[in-house]
Image 1 (cartoon, rainbow, N blue to C red):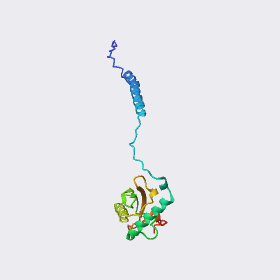
Image 2: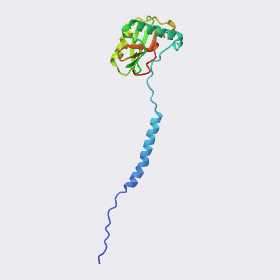
Image 3: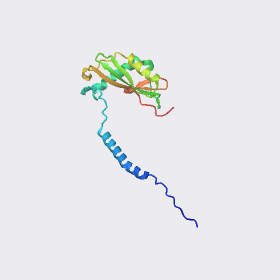
Length: 176
């Protein structure tokens, strides 16, 4: 009775085929980009090299000079020096880098490492400045510019007093 009428729909564009065709081209482009980037290298800018004399590397003379510098810092700052053992949990550890010239003057100084305690950092730098002039460094430790770079650690208790790692007593073992 009823005749079946089949309506033909307009065929939709075959997007699947277009996508499949684009995919290899996209992969090829990504591969070429990856290949180009892998050929590139990032070269950091050259840092000036410090010309540290061989005699200054782990020598007895260097250790003796470090000790003389630490003694001078402690002698010039007696009210800041901690007597006895540092507490088990230090308030702060401040590592200071400084450069000494052939006359024992500090050319530069800066906080190298810290936990962010501004007061301890200021105290470390101020006590170092107060100790100048430092003992004259042995000539064989100086670089071509007539300088010697040193590091020292200031170990601070909660009361703001410090010991230098060069002469520090062992830390307390408990939190009393």
